[in-house]
Image (cartoon, rainbow over all chains, first blue to last red; front, side, top):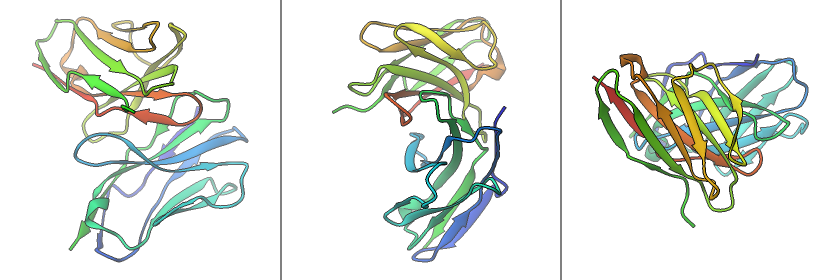
Length: 115
Length: 110
């Protein structure tokens, strides 16, 4: 079974600064997907970024980028130029590569961006 | 294009009652997954429907059941509600590896 661990229950960052959220996972699979989802107070889970394990290049989406270390089973999220609207719960999630399989989520990190 | 929609947004039920939650997937998506998110936790997978069949199931009792209709919409039913069933129930639709979520139904059991 796969597990996802987020060791930082809460973090805060000043507006315009950079913050990194940590995630580690455990799996015996060789091919899989990793995701970061954002859940603001509106409750809707919003996809931030996706990484395919067989791709060595780290995924980026505008101000969001990941540091994927497959051997270490580590998948951190870096948010640059933090904005007040980035305040939310952030969840790291794992999915096997055989498509349409369930997401396995970590417990989340609550991020507060301070003006 | 409407995204994933869930109804109702909030619900209060009494212990022992039954509840039905509804989900309409994103246009073109044929797979619906349901998750339970307890307060302060990450979502936990309940089950997934594809072609009107339950394709996969997480570690939830038989009190949790579901259905998918020919238009791909889905229902989640919970019988004999317990206080511990109080949670946010999330529906996600997908066509491949990307799952898109609705805004959830907040269920409170009293």
